[in-house]
Every structure is written in C-alpha cells, then in structure tokens.
Image (tube, rainbow, N blue to C red; front, side):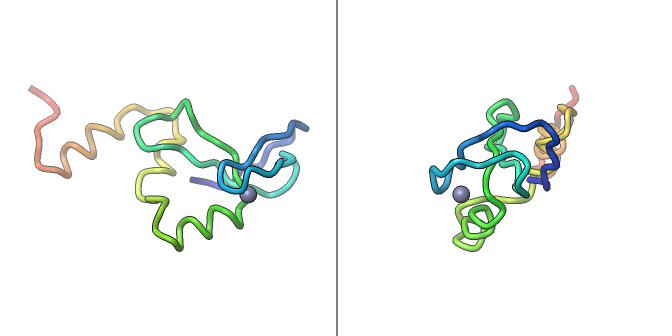
Length: 85
Ligand SMILES: [Zn+2]
C-alpha cells in the first residue's frame, strides 16, 4: 500500500468500515495480493487497524501498486523457484 494523493474529487468506499471516503481526504491504496486491478481506497486509520490485526499482509502491496509485472517472478525466486527457463 502507499499513501494516495488524489486530486480528483471522487468518493470511494472503504472496504474495511464500509464508510464513504472522499478522495481528498488522506487515505491509502490497498491491493489484494496478485490482483493489482482490484485496488481499493481505504481510510489510513482502517488500514492501520487491519495491519495491526495481522489481516493485511504488507510485503508486496506497495510493489503491487507499481505497474511492473516482475513482482511475481521476484516472489518465485524468493520461494526457490526458477522463473526463467
Ligand atoms: Zn474505513
């Protein structure tokens, strides 16, 4: 996840507390592992609570928000696999 600075006035819905979230308010982008298209905007506070509760793995989330597909192969390498034939 990363801090989201969105200048576009839009309203999202926080996936954790189901409350509305004005984009101009400070919030975070949350990305489900392996699915960068389903990133959600969430209250920073809610994200921190989830993190603390251990329900939000943080390691690759920030990388997942980056438009680079190499994240998976890097993970595969870490797991001891070979990602290149
Ligand atoms: Zn929330």
